[in-house]
Amino acid sequence: MPGIVPIILAGGQGTRLWPLSRAARPKQFLPLVGPTSPYRQTLERVSGPAYTAPVIVTNTEYRFIAAEQAEEAGVTPATILLEPVMRNTTAAIAAAALFARERFGAEAVLHVLPSDHAVETDEGYWDAVDRAARAAASGRLVTFGITPTAPETGYGYISLGPEGTEGVHGVARFVEKPDVVRAEEMLAEGGFLWNSGMFMLGAGHFLAECAALAPEILAGAEKAVAEARADLDFLRLAEAPFASVPSVSVDYAIFEKTEKAAVIPVGFFWSDLGSWDAVWKVSDKDAAGNVTHGPATLSGTQRSLVVSEKAHVAIDGLEDLTVIASEDAIYIGRMQDAQKVGQMVKTLRGHAMTAGLTEIHRTEYRPWGGYSSVLSGSRFQVKRLFVKPGKRLSLQLHHHRAEHWIVVSGTAEVTLDGTVTMLTENESIYLPLGCSHRLANPGKILLELIEVQTGSYLGEDDIIRIEDEFGRE
Image (cartoon, rainbow, N blue to C red; front, side, top):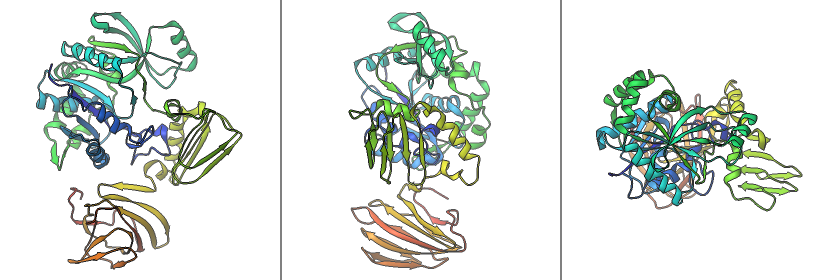
């Protein structure tokens, strides 16, 4: 069989892992378990000889971090498809399948993988992948069903149908996320699996089912792919046709209706990392059952998860607690209520004063590095900028603000109205309002500097890009 085509879905927002996961930098790109992100771990999982180069589907806002982490993983994608708007999994998979059919042929087998899951690839995992690929090549639309170990309420379930060849079962029905009573009943009854959201599909077979069961979505995806335009190493799906399609999950649009659905029961370790209790369950714990990431001191505390980006968190005499401290927000809740964080995010998003806490982080990442907000007030703002070795910002100007740059470490190459100046540690430069300027790091270590902005308007949209190697406007 030719190489399997990995389809990596990396466009979700992961609201139940707030305040670390936010719209501007969601959970798939964060190191939640181990030193690297689930997205990078997923790419590494499909980098072996059984696979072709992956097709990555992500939101246009995540394009640079998706490309950067792929490069860090040593993976060169077949393409990175950019969704102009989020339209759920059916549209995303259909667009990827159309691209894969054009690049690899209608007989290509697609391994569709969410980028925010934790998976252990033991011998059972690879055996399931082989069997699923053969079933998909013969026309089945295969999903992987995880053998349940607890009455989880955060997962959908699959009711097993009759067993066919090579341990591939039919699907009796799909079950929405249950309450705890129903979850316990299904666990006791047997014959139910967790719906992993991982699929193996023949490109041609899947698109044929889309034509029969979701023609409106397929038509929009076809037009979005046909009218897509190349942008650096990305492929931007056409916005108007893609935005016009219904936002429907592939489970509902295809798998619950098709007669070709199949499921392979598997027992390898899997977690969707969909909530903080899921992160706690898969993490290494101390003798009291606690998991800590970042500066924290725990006394008389048990079975708790404490994550802090900067502030030192001290907890005394508590148990079954979730404490997540980001740079600008803190979440505290009972471990058993981890599924309710998404509702908290909806509440925050509904108020003007707190909506920003669900969208952006105090530290923002850009393809050249990033910046952190340090202090702001009337007509001034202070930021910490960091620029990666060999990277440079766009050549730009501002209509409403002037800037002062002070180098903290590294070497800065500053272009100011056509004149190039080199600055090193403790040196500074003034950029008057309206000047054209560019910052670059010609050195081999990270460039860090303090930027002081002053003016009548300090918004990020007061940037006129004259020249930008990242294709931004």
